[in-house]
Length: 133
Image 1 (cartoon, helix red, strand yellow):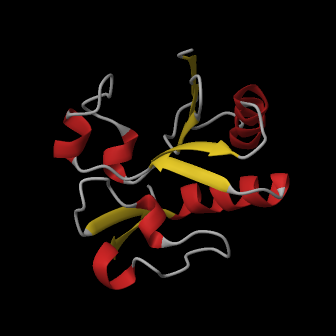
Image 2: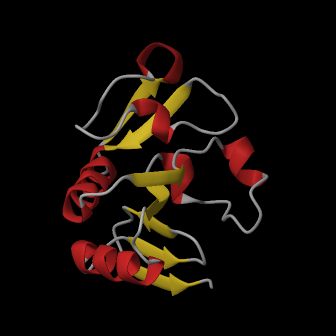
């Protein structure tokens, strides 16, 4: 159903998975070696980066279940734990504009949430939209 690849942060961290993104950008902040990354998510982020022509920053992507349980307000079934989600922002682009663009790009599927300083995007099969500002 989901096209997710498993990477090793230590041996593949510097590997480019698109022209603008490396494996290490998707790694969990707890320092774990395993990194799950959805090909569809990576392609979406690359398209966003190209669309704006500006750096796209990933605050959080893959999270281990243990790390995710320590993130305030995070769901126990978070798409981050499957390698299907990223919290992002683009230099010089308002979160409202980024949210609108991602909603349009995902159409009738995927999760998109807007927060004060970033946009959450995930590759779930059903459409979900929310505002947490």
